[in-house]
Length: 281
Image 1: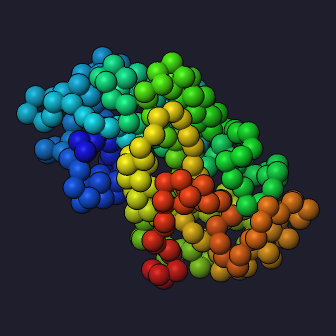
Image 2: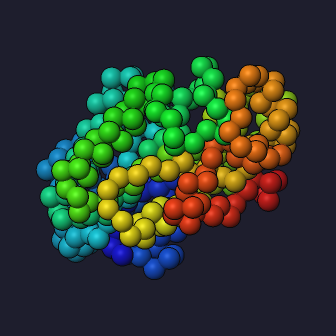
């Protein structure tokens, strides 16, 4: 496929661009920052006209795309003011979705977030492991935008039944250089309770995107995308008893299995995480 990756200069984006290209796709990074070259187009995605023009075609670079991977965003709460985060992220996502439709692109995969599950879980989750079955619980402006983006996608595919939009609720993105810190997490069970001790290796994030792009369907769906294990060596039963006593258990916890359920992604997309911090430390 010829694929546009918005935000391809970011932490996840860099790996996604590399892995999608390695899989034989033609990939163009659309971002506000990046290195000049054949695979990069500088675009202000807050500007709809510029976004549409870049997606339709850029002289000497491309003449259109088969699919869009939308990763561009202020990537977390607290980086900018709440208002700036809201205005940037909702505008950019609407621009990308709308421009893709105007360009006739029917295959959109984008980064939603684990935060819609209720992070930082100061209010305990309804059950553990968490999954996609309960309503969104945004607890920050950043998360609110992610929830609204999912709602927007639901309406867009209702308006256009030929459209496919897949939201991937990525866990905390990590690369191998991050893993040296992981053994220190065991000292305090509450230090990483904010996302149920989850993470996602960027390479497996890229795999999930490739699987979602290849999924032959229409409509909207959402998937939690996490590593197969937690960031802890302490067993799940011990962590849950200490930090979330009384929360109902939905299925087996496993010893160190992810508590951000990836069962749906495994079943529907064929997602199969290959990377663990335990192999790097």
